[in-house]
Image 1 (cartoon, rainbow, N blue to C red):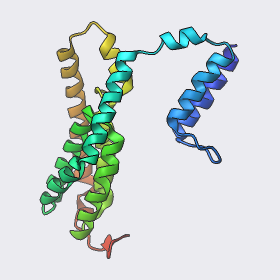
Image 2 (image 1 turned 45 degrees about the horizontal axis):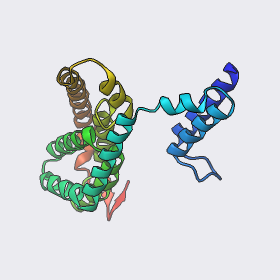
Image 3 (image 1 turned 135 degrees about the vertical axis):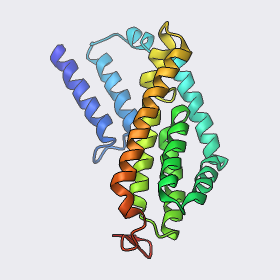
Image 4 (image 1 turned 120 degrees about the vertical axis):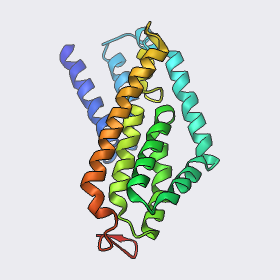
Length: 211
């Protein structure tokens, strides 16, 4: 039974890591659900135990955050925020810091996937118009959203322990913000140092083509 459990877990983890497999119209959520069904089907755990392992307050909180995030996207909030940040394109280093800070802050309480998807086209278009290489900025956006969501209420792995632990919410939040800001500052400093010479490189961007 232990061998079967490990095989199911490994296949499920592989599917979640890859996101999708050729020939299968299944996303990460589908792989997780199939893995849970397989665990029950082979008798690793009973259906009752599987149901009681669900933490409904955590699921409801995450669902509510997804609804709020979707409504903000439909209302144009993310696009307007990205356009507002684009006013600082004349100073690329400052723009990078503001872009990463805003995306990390929003990812801390909302869905980071939506922030990446909505920020990217607006920011890319603005960068190309300003003849700036979008690659460093988009990499910074992706890293910042992951940093912001890694240990906050928008991340399931952090929400459930935080909701069930006896620790004070304020003290836990303070510790989380300290680590997040430290990582954010280190990432921003690294990008500013290693990509600064490429921000204004006219040969990297020509007629909307990155070279």
